[in-house]
Each structure stands twice: as C-alpha cells, then as structure tokens.
Picture 1 (cartoon, rainbow, N blue to C red):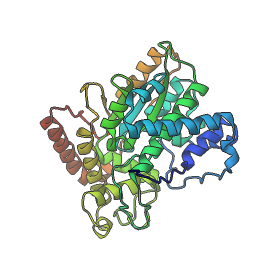
Picture 2: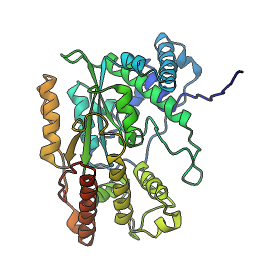
Picture 3: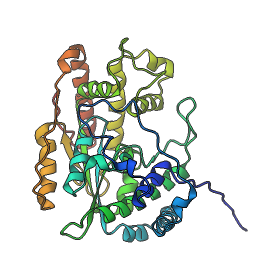
Length: 365
C-alpha cells in the first residue's frame, strides 16, 4: 500500500527577503530607514511592503544550500529526528525574548543585537522581531477574510527561520568565545509551541527571556504605537491599525468574544483580557519544560532590563555601553483603569502560584 501526500510548500516572503539580503540583492531591507525598535516613535500602523523577487534569487550557491537545508530541517521535524536537528543547530545559541507586546522585548532584542556587533536598524524586522515564523496551533481562520492556516505552514516557516537565522548570524557576526554564535529573536508567538521548541533545541541550548509589564501601561504603549487613543475609547475592530491590535482581536476571538462584543469593549479592557490570556497560556505552554528555572522572568523596569543586557555584554566581552530604557509613566492619565489592571496582575500572580510558578512583581511603569 502507498500513501501519497501532496504539500504546497511556498517560501515565505520573509525568508525570501532575508535570503535576498544575504545574496546582496536587497540592500533596502537593511538600510537603517525602518527602526522597528524605536521606543517613542509610532511606526506600527504603516508597514512597508516587501518587494517581489523572481526565481533567480534561488539560483546562487547560498540559496541552493538554504533551500536544501530548509527541506532537510522540515523532514527532521516531521520525522522526529530531533538529534539530527540538534546537530544542525549546534553552532547556534538562540536568545528568545518572550512576552506580551510593548513589554520591553524590542529594547532587549535591539540591545542583544548590538551585543553581537549588529546595528539593529539594519537587521530585518522579520529576522529579529515578531511575526516570522508564524507558528500557530490554530488551524482555522479566526477573522473575516483571514487565510486558513495549516499545520504544514507553521512547520515550514519554523524550518525557514531555523535555517535562515543560522546562516545569517554565522555570516554576519563573530563567534562567541565559548564557541557558538548568539542569535537574538523577539518571539511573542513561541507561546504556541514553547515546549516543542525547548525539546527540539535540547536542554541548555537557548536563553528564554520573559518580559512582563502591567497591562495598563502596556495598553497605553500599544495605542501610542498604533496611532493614538481611539476617540470613542473602544477597541478598533473594524480597522485595526497595527499588527498588535490584530493580535488582540485574535486573542479575544479565541477565548469566545464575538467581533460585535469586541467593538463595544473599552480599549483597556480588550488589552487587559488579551494580556491575561497570553500569560495564562504561557504558564502551561511548555516553556518551563525540563529546567523550570531556565526561563528568566523580567518585570518591566529600566534597572531590570538594562541589567539583563549588561550581563550579556560582560559574557561577550563587549564594552559597549547599554542604551537606557525610555519610560513615560502615563498610567495616572487613565486612573480609573489602575485598580482593574492591578486586579488582573494579582489574579495572574495567583494563577501562576497555583502552578508552582513565581510571577514577577510589577509597577505601573
């Protein structure tokens, strides 16, 4: 008996874009004009479209190697050859920055890139930031007009990311004195496959930096980055202005809210419920698989974030000064939401404690 399976494996635009850069075919990707880590600049609501490349991009030796490696890595993941995958990734140590959006993750990722000698503004958002790979365990469209997302898409993009990150950091940075290349990655969506990632990579083969911020200043930062506070105070369901606002909608739909309900929801309540859903899920995502104390939990604050980077600088013998965290405390401008936000933090702390996990203490910064 023979079983034949047809898979439609189309390289993602992010993989192709990074591959074009490595082939010196796309300088605009990393010309420094798009600062994805800007702490005070609104940028999320107007992303630049990627250019289209013809198939000649895949004809170089580097590209042929990358595509071959992607297929081999995908086969290793599907076939359960985790030892083969670990051998392939042995020279790379990932530094995954995990957390709800606007919780200090972009700052940490930017400073980690500077630690390995890269100008963050010249590293593509796809490689360093959220979005790619689109790992998802939701195999259906949750929003109107959204493309149906299959498991095969997630596995293929996972393979794309592991291969292109390995090539990129080995070509662009210096090897650490201990023999590995450090590969920073802001990875909000690891919450979907955290346990699988830890198992595939193997124990002690990655750093997991978890940032946590009070949901009220988080919401303020989200609307500031997305174009301002909505005039009616409601969440903009019909016209979300950023990827983060679309993620909030997806979170709320996933926990059972209709689009009509979300449209009537106060902006802060929408973000707060999305925030709660994220950290509740993170606790049982498999992130703590094996070594429970392996993930480093970082409560949002200048001292904690800057100290984390200083530790990396010391280990990498990098004397570069740490850029300060910019914090604008505006919670008092929405004082009626302070108590609900603190109640959400307290509820999450109790939830984690019930699982034997310690949730970090948070301020209103």
